[in-house]
Length: 401
Ligand code: MG
Image 1 (cartoon, rainbow, N blue to C red):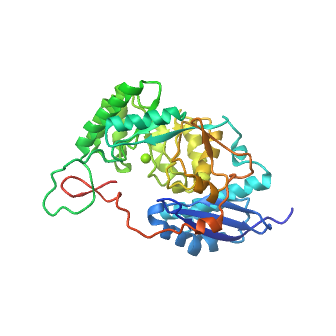
Image 2 (cartoon, rainbow, N blue to C red):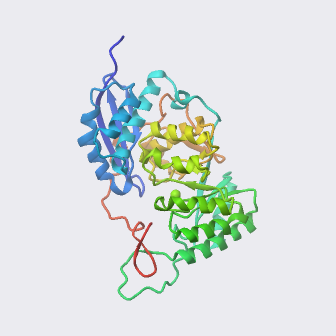
Image 3 (cartoon, rainbow, N blue to C red):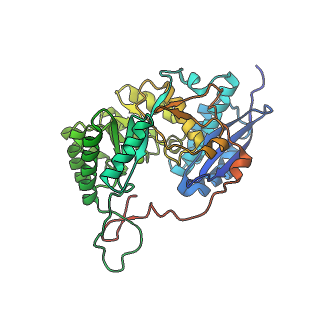
């Protein structure tokens, strides 16, 4: 037996090339020049993730055999005794994805080969069309269609719909105001209008962002059924999971759920009950490729497909990890894509490329992506208090963002 290659050091890289603050982990090994990268991005609480990696996980993993990614994942999850939160899960994901990257580099294979090889040549993606009016949203949809996209998420006014002139009480604090009932009416009008303009050949998606009361969510899922969405996302909050069976009993609108889940166990009743159609997992939020692969395999037994979370606060490294899962998973559904600008491709060489609505891998071993630390340092993270997540109902009370 040759001596194992071990973890020599862990570096945490933060960068903000656009609005989102990204956290990347670089695992350095005892083998000169051999390292891996992983996504640990929790943009709203990034300092806490950095501290979890630097102060707790780094001393825990140094000296361990790089091949034992499963054992390291399992022990990292439980060795803090208190577990299952977004800060620690993201920190663990950075290590986990980096170990998969290293494993691929050692094997001389892309990670999708280690997972079982390609089930497809590329992953079809969906992009976000937004706008202040149904007409504006439709114009954006048409623009994307011209670029070759066939799956398009339609939103109006961010996640909140048109706040208009909400009758707020005197002294109401500032915030992202939102009227859930008006949202339902406005979104129905918008989706109906977009369908009437572009027909049924384009796949439309919509994200409710868990902003409705459960009974309004049931009504909304029924009301949009005639417009045949590809999926309706986060129609309910993780706190209201029992209501999914009510939706299922009453309509066939495909349901996507779960970017806020922390642990594979949270999927289990929804999958085994066949209450959802797409897994909306934020892979780093779950702890990395190791748990994501497990849930994808479990879901495949129930005919439930993947739709990994892929917004701008998934780093390019995280998007690369998503893509490897997409290429392998027999039950792949669709991949969310945030369209990074050119300078992000320079900071992260190997960022997945999208052409004609498909995301393509490169053939480099591992995750096929790297980070230029010098360039990344030119975009330091800023400290600010997020405003869009401070959502309020018309009377000023706090609501889910
Ligand atoms: Mg979402």
